[in-house]
Amino acid sequence: MQTNKSITRKEFLKQLSWLIALPYALFAGLSFKQNSRVNRAKNIRIPLEINKGVTFRDGLIVVKEEESVQFLSSKCTHLGCRIYAVEQNELVCPCHGSKFSLEGKCTKGPAKEPLQKLKFKIDEIKNEYIVEIYK
Ligand code: FES
Image (tube, rainbow, N blue to C red):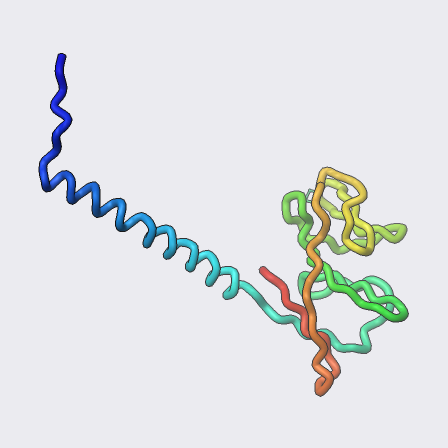
C-alpha cells in the first residue's frame, strides 16, 4: 500500500501556525508563573525587640540568639504541615515527626530538604524586621 505524503497548502499553514504559536504560549506561561510567585510574596513585620529563643509567628519561625536572628518558613518540606513546636532544641513537625535543627537543617525524616530560610530587611525607622514570605 502506498501513501500520499503531500499536504495541501491549508494543512501546511495550519501546521506552521502551531510552530509560530508554541514559543509565545510557552513564554506566556512562564510569565504567568513568575507573576504568580511575585503576587504570593508577603512581607511580615516583626519588632526588633523580639524575645530570644524560638518564636512561632505568622507562618514563620524566628530563631533569635545573642547576636543573630534568622527567619525560617514554618512549612514542613515533607508535605507542608505547619511546624509550631520545639523539643530539645529541634523543630518538630506534628504530622509525621520530621525534625529540623534551629538552622533549618533536616535531622530526621521523612522530610529530606531543609526548611526555607527567609530573606529579611531591617526598617530602622519603625524598629522592625521585614521578612519576605511566600504563602
Ligand atoms: S509534613 Fe512534616 S513530616 Fe510530614
